Length: 115
Image (cartoon, rainbow, N blue to C red; front, side, top):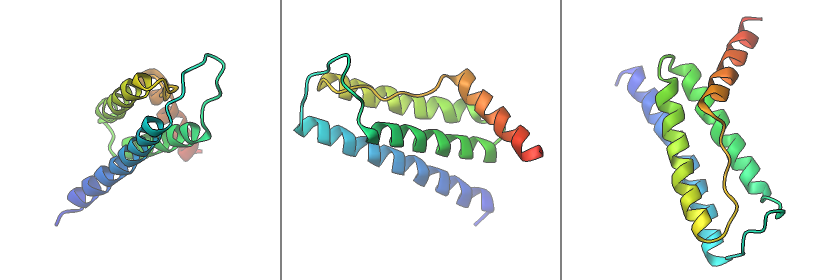
C-alpha cells in the first residue's frame, strides 16, 4: 500500500476524532439543555476542542501543501453543522478561525520551521 494512502487514512482518522468529540458535546447538550445567555461562559471543552481541531487541521495542511482551502473548508463545514445543532438546543457556538487566519498560522508555522 502506498504511503499516500496510509497518510490519507491517518488524516481521515484525525477528522473522525474531531467529529466524535463534536458529537459527544452535542449529545451532552441535548441531555442538559440550558438557555443561551450572552454572558454565559463557554465550556472549557469547547476551547480544548477548538484548539485540537485547529491544530489537527494545521498539521494536515502542512503535510498536504496545496490543499489548505479544502482542509479548512471541510473542518469549517463540520463546525457550521455542529453549531446549528448547538444553537437548536440553546448552547453556545463553537468558534473556528477564518480562512485568512488559518493561512496566516500556516505561514507562521513554516517560518518557524525555517528558523
